[in-house]
Image (cartoon, helix red, strand yellow):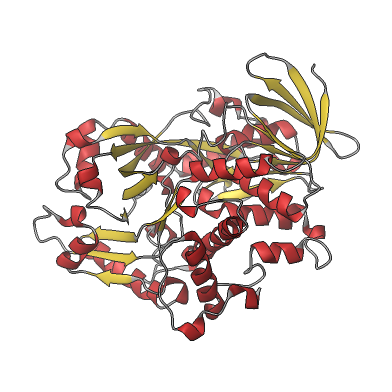
Length: 510
């Protein structure tokens, strides 16, 4: 045993979630000591890596799974609105860091890319028309465009329309305020800034083997060096488990009663990737289609412009699949080792109630190359197979939570599960994930540091970082426009022009 170190905060996992929370906490309380523990050799090597996620800058502009159709035929946009304004929190957080010089150039991680939804077939066109009318009527989606004209859609996304025959009805929406975000690059920037602060450090190749709550309320974290095998201890007042798919096993190790009954259902993914510059320069959009019935949210098909490491690429997919691993670098035993007496019933209940999802994932695993190309053809009719290659995407673990009535529920969002004394919290789940990291970090503050969110403590600084904190951007149209204009200018992304009288400085309201 090498010894014991002390920290105010320990962040398990070196991805976008832990780095966002760490930077935010250090900004609010500069005296905090923070350790980040990561089992791999660098940060952002799992879900936060740019090739492991869609990089959409999820603002629920184009993802139709956030806007379900009600039984009466109307479209429910309530979830889309929630995600939409949650992304505004991320934009404000990033803008603050750019403005104070913590991030030198926003182009190192974010680029303006229009977001589009595209459908074909009479029923789907009717749905998208209703969806557009509901969304465009709200100020959060000002500037959204709609067309059923193939020529107009062809101007927005030429590759999607060229070679399309048969007279099948088509429709699309577009909003120019969309973005592409390289969360791998952003995570590196955040971690670099965090470890440059006094009292902060990131430790790689550090595997957390156990978490034990001590009598004084602190947590004793057992850590093993993956190179040397040597063990050491870290004691912390607060622990955040932000280890992506690895969060569930660590939550189970903590032994907190609030985590009993939770399980996980892993879903893997594969992209098709095109790096041909002649093709890439003709497509500037993220074009989302409708998900297959029974498919998980991460498998919604989309043809995406990506900017990673300064290079443009096209991604199509993802094609969902199943692996018993909880992480790309995990073990095939992960799923089986996560099974506990307390979560057997929820796991079996979800298996019973989601047989269609299981069939879908098996079908995806068994897909041949020709099947994958046929799916691509639906969004890029003239795609040439030789221009595309496979790119393995990230591994996600969907939440299985206990439910009194049904035994267990499969959730496709994210959830914070914390100890009753607020000394530990774990983030479970996947989509919308990285795009709402700032919202999740703020939720951790509200859940675990509520006593500090007062006018005499952290609240003034938090409102400096997140000017809209405490204000509903869904309800306050003018302030929403101000926030978006201000963050668009700092981040160098596109915004919907507004009359000058509607865009006073954000600081006046903050």
